Length: 553
Image (cartoon, rainbow, N blue to C red):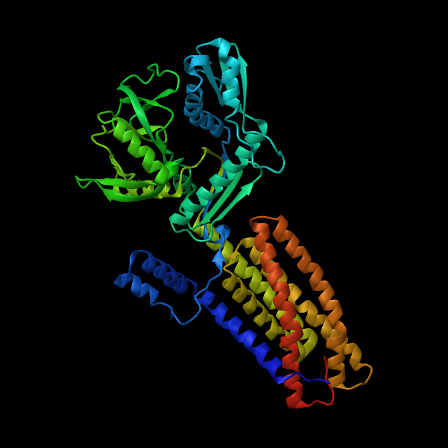
């Protein structure tokens, strides 16, 4: 018979009430957003009267989760970057040279002296003093090869070596290049994410595309140029021995050395050893600070390994200049005055406070393993995003009004019940999006509009089935019960197939496609709930009060 247990009624109304409460912050979007930003700022920097006033715009005991607006609605920056993975090959060879040199020292009696010679990009070539010892030297170098941790190429080594006369050529194997490319892109992806998170942007999209490309979309950033300044700097910090200094940029550097300009002094160039004593990879902290003269600077601290190498070098090279190099420019080249144990120090230069803060952020996030080449960049202004929101509102309102009118004209009072359920359906959708912290995009709005049209399908099936059952003269209560029972299988079949499509779109798609899939999938769940449970509960309550002898659907 037409009956719903009390506990089921309470549960249905409780779900609807929870939806209203959690969706409500989106009605006061600006106030709640200001409240959330103020609380985050208070947690990060401490409380101020201004921040406390902003935080008081919304009661703390109410939910404050919002539906995040995507790039096309909020405005922001879009970048497509290509990671220059080949750069890592030469970096690996430069880092390998001291290891090879030290390994061959034990064979000096057999092979003579060891000298690095010019080699093609991505290759290390070493000349030995005694050509007759080439086989011994080659065996020693091959002994430095390490296995690659890869399931696709088990047993493969990371480097290979060959001999030609008295010269040994060392290069990465093809298997290691593939593994290195993958590591480089994944490392770049993580560092970009850390850099963007450090400046407090909301809901960025950072994902890999293809073998060596990264898609970056950040809502709320003023321009693509601003975003590039945050993530595009390689920020590779190294500490290198200084060979000489002068004013000639074309001075002969020698094998294993490089001539690079000074960042602060125009026309001054340093010749440095390319193999660093210690690098920014071994930094564990970097903070903006001030030097002894009150000028902006950056203090740093190395990990245990970096601290040991830094301390050993400063102990053995007192009185020698030491270059602090950032992205192939010498920030400063102080003379080592004394042993510096502990692995901490300070970087000085002609920084502004903002520059020292940004440099500290970049160093903490880590250096990009390779340079980024930006293939595509777009700036979406907030005005265009607002236009998209208004257009979405209009589209949703028109679809909503048309469906409400159609249902009322077609099914009368029962259509009114379906319309109330439809309104609750939209509320539940926004509540779910808010709780999940999902990002709403323009395709997501399209998913909502589509859901509005699909939401009444279940009610149409039920009401049409009730009409058919009324013709058998079994009475209105029995007709309503059978209408819901016999329409249920068709409703579930139709919505399951659509939900499967939404899941496939979410798994296989990216960006806007996922936004559409999320709203479509949530809309299916909420529309089935409101059609099967909410409308039935309203009809049961109405029937219990009126007890009509006949009904007209």
